[in-house]
Image 1 (tube, rainbow, N blue to C red):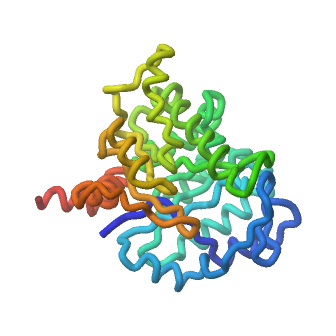
Image 2 (image 1 turned 135 degrees about the vertical axis):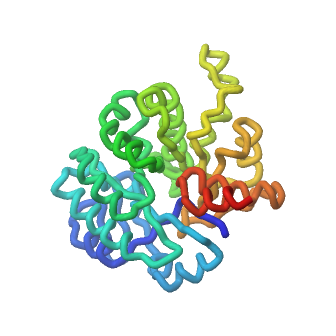
Length: 301
């Protein structure tokens, strides 16, 4: 059965924590207020557990994560940790097929606190792309990435806050989110991989299609083609067959994994045939997550 590495689900403790806030990020009823984005009317059904279980009935595993565009990770510690703790509390109580990515406060980098959360059964750590978009950012979070490496768990890179409003409602998702993912892909390639040689990393929304810029990279003195990083994965949310096919032509299929960004989108059909669909939705996510089930299946085949 398929794995979806990218979903969001706001359960009661987290919702209550957001509603207690008086400044963004905050919930007023079901209206979400963020810096840099217009007010967003949340559909309560999107975060209703019974509804989501029905939507995910064909999945073996659906990994939920903190919504990094909320900007929670970069709040002052006294504001960030109550929200992160509420998220972890909810996530660890979710029934199958749900699992969850851990979150971390970036204004109070605490490897011991991350280790404790991971040891309760979380799948790995999600960080906002804004945190690792350059060499300095990667140096700041290096202690957290070391915790992942020690436990052989992956990093999931997700867009962070959009920043100052600059366009219509679709602008944050199409412009700053994509730019952040592009920067994080190249920053990790240039600065992160040497420091963390064995860390598996998954970049949301096909890393903003950053790998497709390899020709420009080469023309400016960089290297790319023929040097695929088998530990750098890309998930498919918000794209379709044309973009997925283009990334596969550049990097091969082994690093592409299924993600939906549910409830905001549905998992795309790569339309590349049964074998490719199985690789993207089953085989590759199992390698990303180092799932025991995958190793047992391989040993029996």
